[in-house]
Image 1 (tube, rainbow, N blue to C red):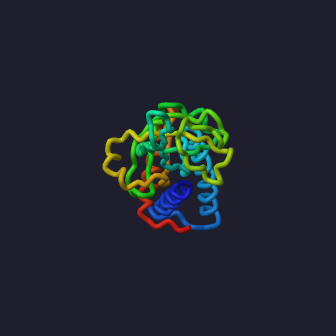
Image 2 (image 1 turned 90 degrees about the horizontal axis):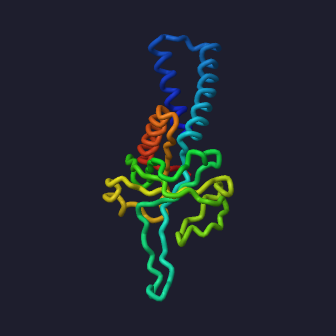
Image 3 (image 1 turned 60 degrees about the vertical axis):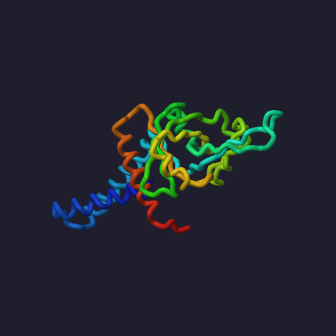
Length: 203
């Protein structure tokens, strides 16, 4: 996400230097560079606080417990749900029912609308999750991230659900009620990320 902001700022600077015929010297280039660093850092912090973003998102399944009326362990696929891990400082903007958007690595160029179903009541990794088989959080998440369950409500997703294996990785954004103007920036960045999924990921 930060890469997209840097690339966008660089493109604006190149266009401005070219159109306005600003000379490239030891004053203009450092000024543009330092200004860009400050602006992008501030924008990322504000975006992550008011409209949180997570690249650590995965689908999960719900398993039905064995009871006298259930003779076998029958997994019920929650194909329209996923769990995402967010930074703790975003907790105040991770309310149940908040609007969300999701893009899957396996469906490049597509962004689906959704809604927050539940924010994990505990930060521990041993939470029961009421029968949900949640994939383990990424090693870099640990105790520093808050699990959030998101339901995909976009009717268009039904067409693509068969293309999204359980456990597929996704990128998720949640939109808070404050600073609606910045929500447009987050939506734009998420769509740019969705189009970036057409490119191969180099590990």
